[in-house]
Image (cartoon, rainbow, N blue to C red; front, top):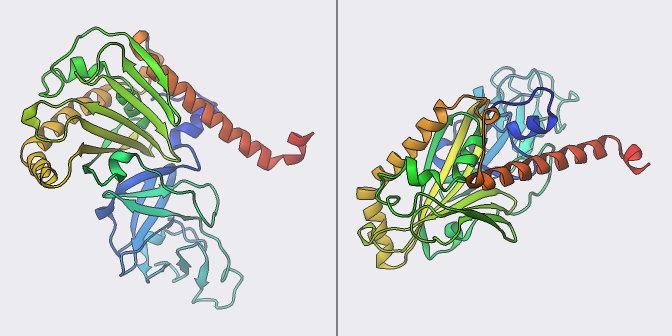
Length: 347
């Protein structure tokens, strides 16, 4: 997505809004050995204790800025490989072997991040400063309700993560791009859409058509931004009724996006085992084929495609979401200004 020169609002959105939970990688990406990754405009290091407990720091040693990820994990801390400086999971320097007792020891000099694991993914709270306790991670019911079963589908796409948001907030593309899919071959190829507000966001939906195709898409904010849609399934798709997709999208770096889709069905008891077997053996390959269609289109779009648009009624949801995100970014910038100049704001 082409950014606007000298637009601070766009600069905020490009790297992700602050004070939100984001999925950053699948759980199996991180073991006891430190792992470095770029997410949300930052370079992070993640590792586990032998118990499996997960930690995350900014991947910069407070001594000389060397990558902590090149060091050695020592339980709840990392020893930098450059000079042996030990940094605990909360960002506090616990030891400077080359100069014991120096002012660096005991200082909280490295930005630490709160992380949680759920449903096969690692989630990180994107704070700008040290906080002792983050807000709870609140996920949609399709992930938390034991009556549902889910699979995580993770991939990385070239392009701005906001184009992925646009793609999901565009139900009509399913009728055309995915028309060969077993789950998106039905329904009218013409539609009128409307927006329905909810307590946590909004739903963009076709008028007069439900449970036929990809007929609606939902945007939600529960302290984490996520999207939800429903695909009706034929009986050959197994038990569980409609097939839900929960999506969340995280910027990795300029024009690289981390793409998370949880595929969910409401099944329990013997139906859960039947659904999971059917998914792995028949459905998963078809779902990847549909995702591949999206990936190819989005990766071939020019970075400035959003500056060449002529939008129409089907794009109301995209316009609504883009405006909402820009307003959130403006609020974030206003809070920063208040923190910098509290006396001027009060005056």
